[in-house]
Image (cartoon, rainbow, N blue to C red; front, side, top):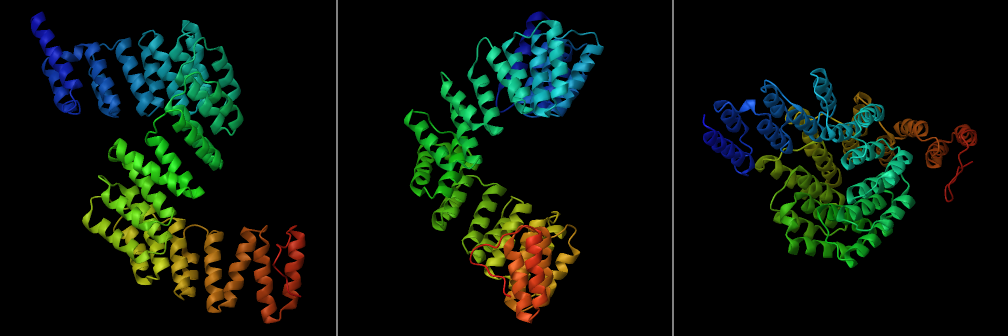
Length: 486
């Protein structure tokens, strides 16, 4: 092949790799490689592997790598970087070891992805071993390697080391600031995280999102909302992460008007159509605010729906006492939609059955989980069924289900059975349930009071006194308003 012809072949290959409508056709591109003997070009192969990793296709990238008769540092670096981004992260380390066995020396582009892989694995010893190699080769001053070391310390929650690495950096970009701020916030040191955030010379939307999210997760909802408003005042435009973070905050604080403003913003800005997660968050927001009409409108208008979309509306309907409508939507989902239900979907629809009193529907859904949908039963599903059976008067059946569960019932399930037993006058079973609750929650004074009252109703005064002594023994104080009858 002449030089001109080879250059034209290579240009065509690069067009195939970069064009959006062809870059995912790996088989065709790979065939093109082989037909034109381009698998001898490590430069082109490394480019192909980078495209594969950007599309999360590392198994294919690895097969392409194996076709190179003589891989060089460029090709190894591409594979190491791909695994550090897509995983399995340990394969980055394996490829590095393979490279060294071949006698290929690493360069400054080898170590940053290796450190990132160790950070993703949260393997600080492995990461420090990699960093020793960095020192041997004299690459420790490269910015990407310093950021890799910083991310390793942050992900492994070694914030004292992270702060030292950060302070020693000659130049700190937005990425390094965001990393160390995120690390302190997620480790619970919000004071240091906020202090660093205020010190930043040029904040990014990622910086704001990080601190707002950490404030929300730590329960400082008012502060999170205040920082969101400050962000808007300073001219920052919310993105998808901002929206899905702040809408639950608005719902919990009852800030309906701010939530509606966010809804209006995402519609006018166009990001509503781009991210299905935003529609899901809006459905969840309106359901938690009790505005089912708007929640249903948003749900129906969503350009795309995933299983989270259906779960949000079904669970929201259960939460607001519209169980029958939730069941209708579930049946629409399973009968006329390509989205398959998951375990959370069944928690939602079983909760709908509980609130609507649909006993047989609940039984059918419960049994269909394994037989029709191959979904493993979890504690939450059993909890819904015990609640449904108990409320429907099938107390013995509920207790029987609890006896055959593959896991131990928790306090919520025993509490549901206790409520059903007291409502139906099944005091013997109620006594059994409350004894289990005392074992699970020895600190909860209410359980002792309930059992004491059961004994009192039977005239079992020795039992009442036994409860009083057990409370003293367990150092449990009686809550105001409760009484242990003598």
